[in-house]
Length: 237
Image 1 (tube, rainbow, N blue to C red):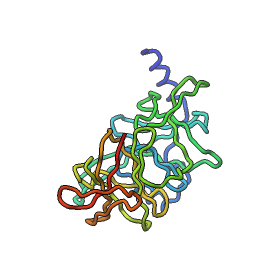
Image 2: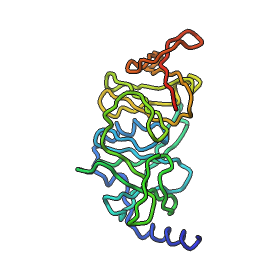
Image 3: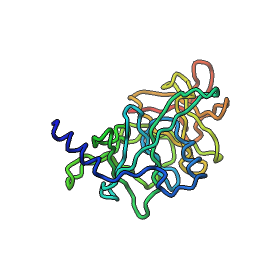
Image 4: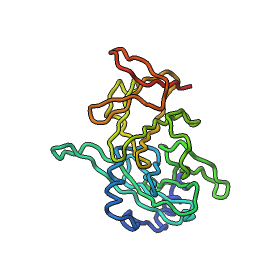
């Protein structure tokens, strides 16, 4: 096992490594895309880009893709968030990939401190018999169903449709009604999404924009909370 790990580390260092700034992303696009990163989450398709993230629990995280035959390792960058006084609050590794043309899905692996692995944040993976390894997968095609629903992988995909350019948050009984835990991502103009794992049960939730809360208009299941508010309801099986 030690010999295998050593060989993987040597192989990793022999591969070319590219930095994020080698990719042709205009500074304006980069600023918008980076502003969508609020923590570690599964890969997210936003427009013509995919955002990958990883926790800052190691010295270096790289990513390699199947459409490049895993011949190039792209280094992730570190993003540090600060409070109004400039004090560092949290940090996350990220990598932004422009979508290759005519590709419906992308397989990839992470390289964490020299060791190749699947992405633990991404619930989608498949075994590649040609290279004899499990690969993480991102499906490029946007799902047709833009309503809140439970996915087959055990995650619940919450969606909100409204005006573009908003800062929409999600809160509910699964966050003890704390609306600052989950920031939704604008994956298309006016379409905000987030997927989170929830155990089987009944959950109440609402969306937030600033201090205003509102129900999920596309979900007909509603109920009153203990404090008399109307909330949307989802059953997780």
